[in-house]
Image (cartoon, rainbow, N blue to C red; front, side, top):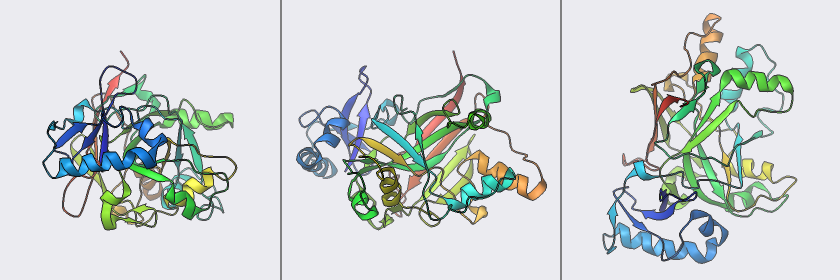
Length: 327
């Protein structure tokens, strides 16, 4: 099933069930009003939503209406935790090499995760608001999952069973501030912008054969100012699947229902597939010519991110954002 959160003037919005083809929707208020309620009581509430989803997909929902992605908040507008992984070793290695840093010896066998702000998650059409162009805003197209409760010390297989929903994400970074944050030695805070998510969150079964071993085997398409810059297979070169990312997060603590865990920008060793973050493009340019040629996002720029199934249908809906100045 596919779930979304409509704006209704409240902090957490109104939960709706969305048809498989993203054409129609139905309020879920007879079952739950907010997505976090469903995540908290998944075994009881999700079957009821699944029944509504089937009715909607069969065209028999009496109060269905046209689905409008522009009305969507993030599926989970605020989360108890949002941790972004670096699941693509190729991407991380490129960035290290471009700045002349040693590639970590543990890069391909130990996952890394960074905590990101979870109190202000954005809908698919929200502006990327920047205080200053000089901060170096960069898109970061990736995938993310919402978990149920995962116990401390859980293995990768058990952690994989804790996945409830999958989402498309644009985890914005302010690259010049990331550098400044790194110099403090205590992690990045100001360098991580607000993350936007696709209109709908989907259960793993909606992906069919594209969901294998904790990986999403779909192409993530990125367009910058209307020009496609990336069509990257999210599964082929993913070094750490979502089970391993979640298990790493749960190594020393419980992961509670409603946590979001992300892949980081998708990346492919075949550079002809393009890129899902400007920083990767700049790293490739630096390694090829000695200096980057591509600049970061500027005010007025647009970013569009989408993933389609083998049938050509959008799986999560599209993220469509514009870069805007504060105020």
